[in-house]
Length: 579
Image (cartoon, rainbow, N blue to C red; front, side):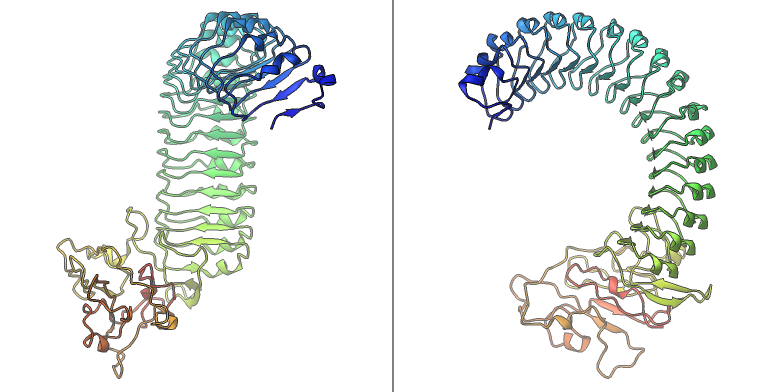
């Protein structure tokens, strides 16, 4: 529906100064557009199917803003020079392959966006449009920029992302008013030393290039607030990088950095630091001086510890140290009272400090794939906690915990069916005593013997001998046979995940539970999913699916079975056995 800024009566047609025809499914310009030639200042034709620009368009001598993005325009006519009052021209996401030299006649033009067009070369004449303040050349297949680019002395924003640039012209040093420079996703091997003259630069994006170092000249850009150097080949940052004291956002992800310079202690205004996917072996103590930090991302590194100075980051809200080599968490982390998201998955952490209970604003705590035996009792006081993750296969964000007394420390701790943690498939997290003894990975530590009967490649695990039915000695799982809906045939309470003992059997007798396999022809739909062992002999189903002798747990006093459902066959409800 077209939007007019005055009543569309004939008497006032000449007073229309803005016409919005976006998303009107147009293939050509409206025929009555010349009616507004004396007054029209803004014409928006974005997101249509226009292919050609008629001459009538260039008779709109008052036109200041022309929007033609997301069309099928393949040519900008030389008559563009007639629009002497044009201030903004947007022809992005079209099929324009060439920019006419006549564009230099638009002496008032300040904003030019020709992004996402198949333009392989810019005409040198574009550098004569000295009035330009914003030039967007993203995704245009450019291999180089005009050598006289510095003639655009009023330029405040230059975007040339997603091209094939190998270098930047030295005349860049003349752009003393440039505030935003985006050269990301190119093929730059180095930055020119002339970058030091960009004294007004506030935002610098150079991600996804081939940079191996950053010139010290960038330290003279004292007004820099945001820097993105991710996905390069950087081995280190300049030692005096902390001189960029106005920096608020720093992204150095996916490089080859082994350490951060200690000078970052001067970055008091830094709010976001993303240093993930590097080779950091340690985190400088100076990180504690970045007191303005709100988000800190350190995933996929080689960190073995967190410096205690992290306790100074009182404004920190998000801390992500996934996939490192942490074994402990400093108790002083409890001073980060504003922390809302703490992610420590895929490490080797064996214990969470009691001080975790001081993080009263914590909403998400991710501890998957570690080596935790239990959680501290203080977890109970985290009233705002909405998600506590202990396993990749966890079905619910929050868990039910039982209080027990650790026989080693004599402290009251929390446990559940996911603790102690087992070794993850990725190689991170708990390996457990059973791994150290050279035995095969079992379903649960000290836990059940598992057999998936009736499936191809029957697998059994013997707790006493560690022998398995397969030669590799590793427990594997075949696709789960899902039975048909048996509502009405079996009461819901009969499938509750609890172990069913033999009738009249002693406590020492191992408990048997069968996991039936669905057959296409022979299985009766009335057959229950779980059967006690004395009923299995009367049935035609496979032999026992789970044999679970009592195994002592070092710190379990009164375990209970957690009902987590059987439909996903997680077998997580057999984590603890009665001592």
